[in-house]
Amino acid sequence: MSRRAATLVVTSILVLVLGLVGALIPVPYVALTPGPTTNTLGTGEKGMPLIQIEGRQVYPHKGNLNFTTVAYRGGPGNRIDLFTALRGWLDSKTAIVPEETVFPKNETVKQVEQENTLQMENSQQSAVAAALAELKIPVGNTVSVMAVQKGMPADGRLRKDDHLVAIDGTKAENVDAVKSAISGKKAGEKVSVTYERAGVERKVDLTTVAAPTDKSQAVVGVTLRDSFKFPFKVKITVGDVGGPSAGLMFSLAIFDKLTPGSLTGGRFIAGTGTITPEGEVGPIGGIQQKMIAAREAGATAFLTPARNCVEAAQAAPKGLRLIKADTLHSAVTSLDALRTGQGTVPACPRS
Image (cartoon, rainbow, N blue to C red; front, side):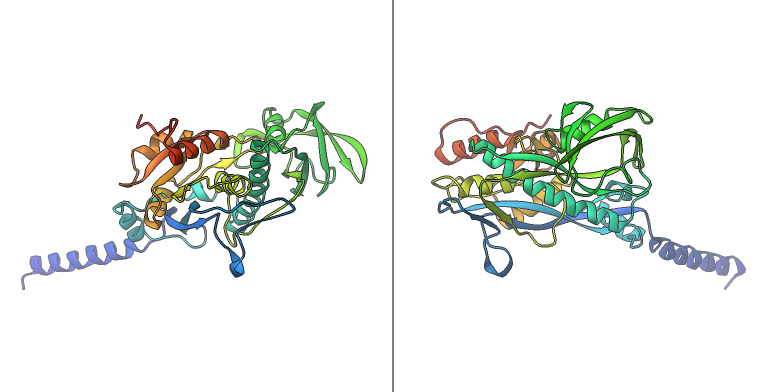
C-alpha cells in the first residue's frame, strides 16, 4: 500500500471514529414524544373513579373525555446525545426542543418537577371551580401562600398558609389576578400586600425584584394557590402526572358527572388546555405530540385551545377532528352540538 493510500485509510478511520464519538456527545436538547392519555370519566388507582364526587348527585355517563400528556427524554444531568437528537428530528412523532423550553435556566430538575406538581394541584382546583361556575353553583375563594422562596422579598414577611386579601388595595380575586398585579410592576417598585394570618388581617410592603427566569417580570418570591370552598367534595386522582394542561378535560368530566345525560354521546373525545376558575381555556405546549397520542388511543375529536389552533391544524393526524375551545362554556356548547347535530362546532383554522 502506498503512503498516500495509507494516509487516506487512516484519515477515513479517524473521521469515522470522530463522527461516532461526536454523535454520542450530550446536547442541550429535549426529545418530546406522545405520552399516556387518560379518560377522566374512567377509573384511576385501585379501580376507583378518577374523579370522585361526594355530597352531590352524580349521573351516569359514557364515552371518553381523555386528557393527553407529553413524555420527554433528556434534561440537565441526563442529556440526550447528538445521534438521538438527529433521529428525533427525522421522526414526525418527536419534537426536539431546546433544553430551557422544559427546564428553565437557574432551575434544577427537582424544582421543575415540584412546580409541575403544584401546577397540577392548582389546575384541579381551578377545574372544579370552573365546572361549578358553569353550573351556577356558588363557590368561595381565597388566595393562599403555598411556599416562600428563601432570600426573596417575601422571605420572613409572608408565611405558608397566609391568605392574601388585597394587592395595592385591590381585592385578591384569584392567583392570576395577584400574579398580574405583581408582575406588572418594575423591579425595585414596592407592592402593598394585605393578608390574613390566624384570623388577623395584616399589611406588609414588599420591594419587588426581577424574576430569575424572566428579567422583564417582577416577583416577590411566593408560590400561590387558589383555595376554594366547595359545597361538596370533589377528588381527582391522576398519579404521577404534573402540569396544568389537563384542566379543561377535568372541568368537562365534572360537568358531565353533575348533569343528566352524556356530554360525549358515547364518542371518544380527547383534548387539552389549561383552565382558569372563570372557565377560560389557555394554550399548552407539545400540541402535536398530544394530538398523536389522542388519535392512537382512538379519539375522533380533539378539543384544542384557541391559541394552539393554527399550529394544531397544520399537524393534525388524519381522522382527528379539531374543535376550537376558548372557554369551558364554548367547549360544552360544541360537544352538545356534536352530539345532537344541531348548532355549530367551531373548527381550528389553518391560518
